[in-house]
Amino acid sequence: MSNGDVDCARCGETWTSKPSQIYLFRIDLACGRILKLGYSSNPRRRLRQQLGIARDVPTRILRTVQVSTGHQAVCVEKSAHAEMRRHHPDLIVPKSAYGNAINTRTEIYRADAEAVLCAILDRIERDLAS
Image (cartoon, rainbow, N blue to C red; front, side):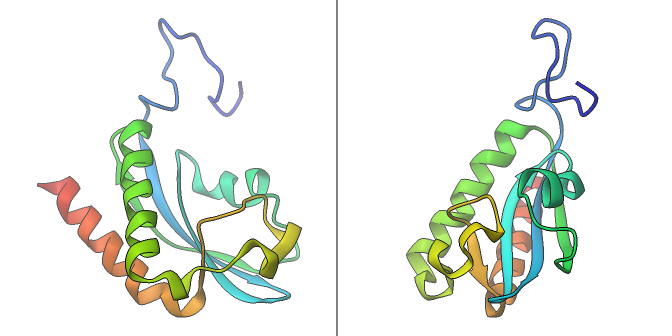
């Protein structure tokens, strides 16, 4: 409740309706530097608490893009991942490479995907502004 993840459906602001952000994280794991693209209303909390990344692992929030609702954020994020699967499958890091270091099975990219992911975020930002 303190993070606003639980509230009253009648008068509260659920994750689908409250403002969110598309984020790009850089994470320096023992297996190497990787990137994580996702969405959250609180990227800083998402980085450590929800993804379960150890405190001694160097991380950095490279970029965020403001999105008006969580619903819109999840749609935009899914579209970005689909684009990566279609056009840049070689930049996707398989779960076997990072194991349990991150609480996720997908949406992890090689460090050299940064320019491609930033271009996608640029386009998302332009589309949201128009």
